Image (tube, rainbow, N blue to C red):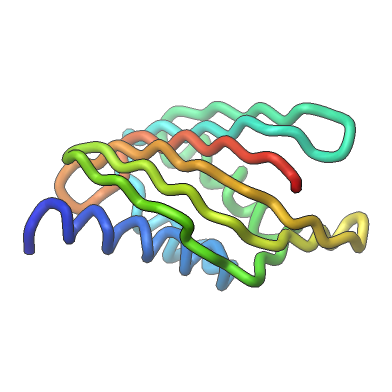
Length: 127
């Protein structure tokens, strides 16, 4: 498999696991020493999460899977220049806390090593 094909497969697996709410599959895509970062705005307040190492960000992934349900996924663009990839996607996010669904656009900046994600930065904005 080419590096480009491997990167595309990882991004698609990452997004599919997010949409399914599959914590085990999500964690399986990251290197143990990976970095995880999310930046964006939800309603009227900013959100910023930064963690280093799967042990630190697994609880964040668990919380995201527990609280948010994703639907109507659409990959808008995917650019790969190994070992980096940039994915622009859109999804409807339902919050189990507020009961509200919000259409959201996201951009993922991903760095890969072999078959794992070593750096993940997600930026999102509600539409």
